Length: 285
Image (cartoon, rainbow, N blue to C red; front, side, top):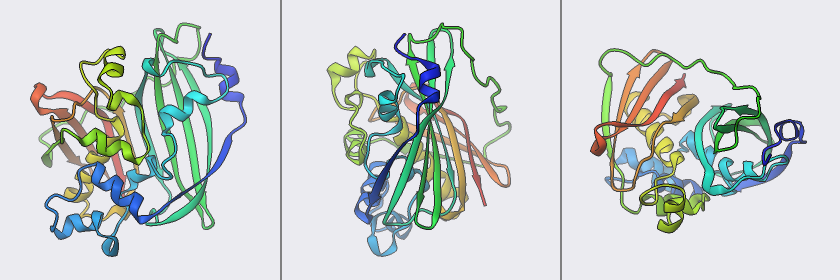
């Protein structure tokens, strides 16, 4: 069996060091659509080094190393083909605001392996700290087609109830044709997002947008519309990737303000509101 669940979970954590600069933060922000209009003061918070604030979702690419989906495939007990792998979900806990520049230590391990019958789900947990203490904890849920069926734990089945009533805010965000090409410069070089032949092998009509790009676009929309642009208010952010997004499409982002949390649903306008992100919650101060 390409995935040895017991070996993967029992393996020693991997540690490493990452560093980033203001340029890395600016590139990430541009990759998720920041900077339009270019002279808007609210956008300059994401693009101009003298005013720079770090959107918490930058944590998913900080250091420009392999993202969780790819690095998780090199862990002990895991040996699968990249073409059969999808990013199933992402959760992020922010312990304090991310600095514009920094150096930190990462500790990564497979926290769980779930047997979904026709697929396996790996949970790669990465904890990050600098000299001042913990910065963030990042969980990537890695969905591997064709690797289930060994009789293991199916994992949690409870999901949050969908938000009800009219959303407090709805915005639309167009995705540029070259959005995936720009976003991948922050470190996710998976050819699924650039190479038509690889995308076809994986079962898609053309290269798809990174799920984490949609993740970043969505958090920016929440921060800009319901949190007054204050990136430091975000405490945690979790989502499930429910469907693909193609460059050139438009995201419809619906938000329900629940006091200390914002519930979010993201769909694709051009495909009759096909789901893109579900079970999405932003907890904030």
